Image (cartoon, rainbow, N blue to C red; front, side, top):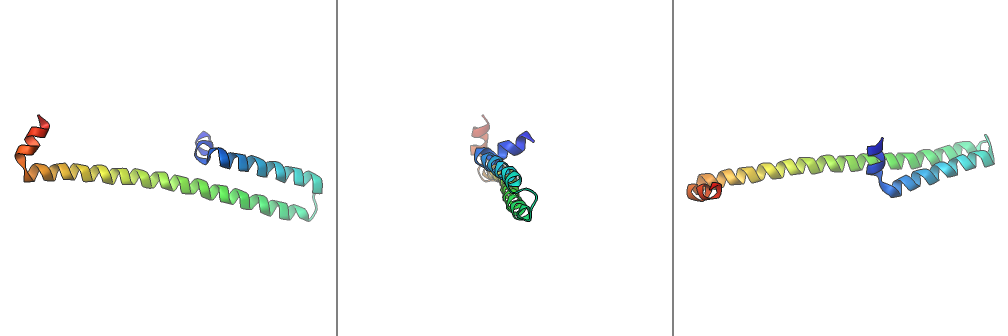
Length: 95
């Protein structure tokens, strides 16, 4: 759960808190009337947007990890290619 708040950041955490406070206050001010459905819909839309932003940030982290793996593989292949094309340069690099 701590990772969720860390990933969401301060802005999203504030939005969650304000939305929840407004929803609860609207619930007590209007009571359990037909306006409750409207308030619930607004609350659920806010939650859905926050969940989507969280999932997007998780996807970005995953993509960054994959790109780092590709970059390290490319650098390894480049060193191997250099060693094959110029054995003397590869020997001086390892010394």
